[in-house]
Amino acid sequence: MTAQQVKRVQRRQTNSRNLYQQAARRDKREERSRPGERRRLWQLAVSGLVLILVVACKLALPDVTEQYRGKILALLGEDTDFVEAFSSVGRMVSPDGTVGEALNDAYTAVFGVQDMEKPAQTPDLDAANTVPQELPDNVCLTQQVLGFSYAAPVNGTITSAFGYRTHPIAGEELFHYGLDIAADSGTVICAFAAGTVTAVGESSALGKYVVVAHDNDCSTLYAHCSRVTASSGQQLAMGDPIAEVGETGEATGPHLHFEIQQGETYLNPVYYVTP
Image 1 (cartoon, rainbow, N blue to C red):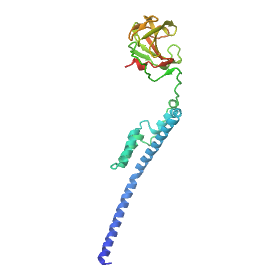
Image 2: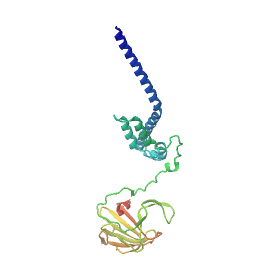
Image 3: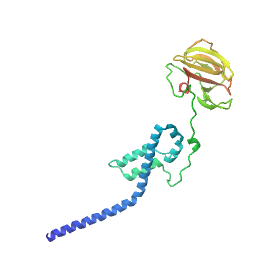
């Protein structure tokens, strides 16, 4: 080997040592900056795992999941934005993605902007363990197709919805099978849809009432009337006047108690009387 070749080899060795030293220094700098990113990546991974477990439990054990919903939200953070979290992961693995920025975005999306060193708030266990009341068998909460034209029987303010409530007279929690619509006494009540008057009567609870039968095994009840102007057996078109608003029976003010039945099942009238 000539002297020139020896020098060339020595220069290559020197260059290699310099490159190695530069790489080592760069690795040390990167190593010092990694703990924060690693912690955030670890937190994001844990949150993703919890999310997968929550979805699996929701599908397999919906009742149990509902009972512990409050605790789960407290663990993940109520402000968790999972769409942004997964978008951040996508940016991180994309060719031009920046790991640090993506981790920051994902960290914020999952854990929020709050300081992670702060103690977690105690979840409301009473609210988390609240079990919905069982519905009566003859009730349907979803909107059904009636198969005919209809219109609100009276214009007014809904003062009591369909569902469980504290009865204003009895003071007990009972299921309310209709919708209460407040209006001035004497306001005309119109037929919800075309049909036939099947009953006109009065009771201690409903006061003066009228029942109308419609197509497709549907019927409607109008109660607490001040007076009923329709007669049993009368044929009606949608919008025909049948009674007037009052507060007869168990009522605390003038209003229409309106019910819809399809067969033996009570439907929620709110789907059919509001725009």
